[in-house]
Image 1 (cartoon, helix red, strand yellow):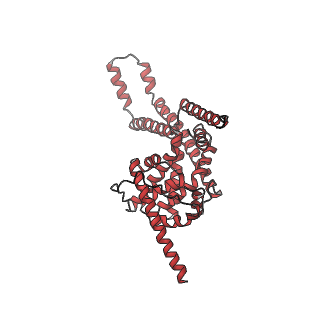
Image 2 (cartoon, rainbow over the protein chains, first blue to last red):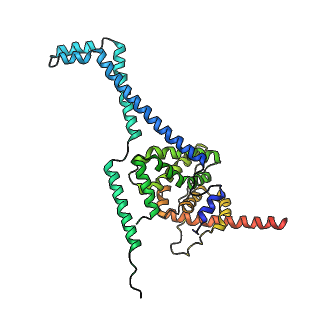
Image 3 (cartoon, chains in turn purple, yellow):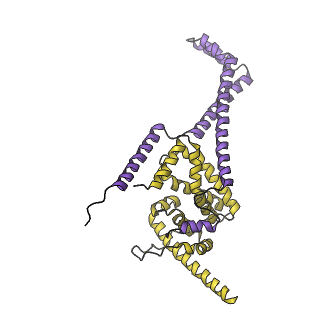
Length: 146
Length: 191
């Protein structure tokens, strides 16, 4: 393409190449802020969901019951199961809370996952090598004339 | 070997992946103009294009952290934009009539004349008259000077198809430009 064609084409649509209008800049900042806020809320939500999950289990006394009867026979386990099903509300909570906590954790993981530090370091190293090659190519002394 | 500009872009992506949000704003500054132009040419109106652009940046923001090959950013970004434009077109039941039956472009034909900056206004006006699949390959070539391989990745077809599509797109554009010039000359003569 001829020099300046791209820029001239963009200007036809009122776009100044290489610049970001103030209104767009605001939109980007808003986008970043919204993303940050979303992750913050998700993080807190996950923490609260796990705390509630643990609280429900602790409150229902089941862990204590199981700890007390560790190594017990099948009969005792059956009675533990009976105890487990005593309260319908608690039962529902015991099911819903862990599911919610796990779902939030998975969601949080997908929203915040990133490339690993190792991969990041490797990519930076590759960039550095290419930069060195580039500067070596620029600084290479010109060969003898003729 | 990558150019300085490409390396700078790669570093921006790595900076964002390492947690620097300002790097994302710099990437938006780089691509906002060409991407806006690309979407405006594919959308039915500028308001839709603006919405699509916003969606593209949201998606890019969400997934850029997991982009494993920073050098593929440009192709990846245009893939998102194209997919978004396609969805919009499909929604209004005007899907791209993609044709793969075009004859192959002449391999060793004369190099087509490049477009000059003076021709930009005319090219801008005539782009709308082209078929969408011609328009998109031309835009990728004009705006980003993408090689055939990258265009093929964005469009999702073979390099041969891209070469042929680009060849016929340029012919169609030249034809439209001649038509427009003829019409303009007639208009000027009449007044």
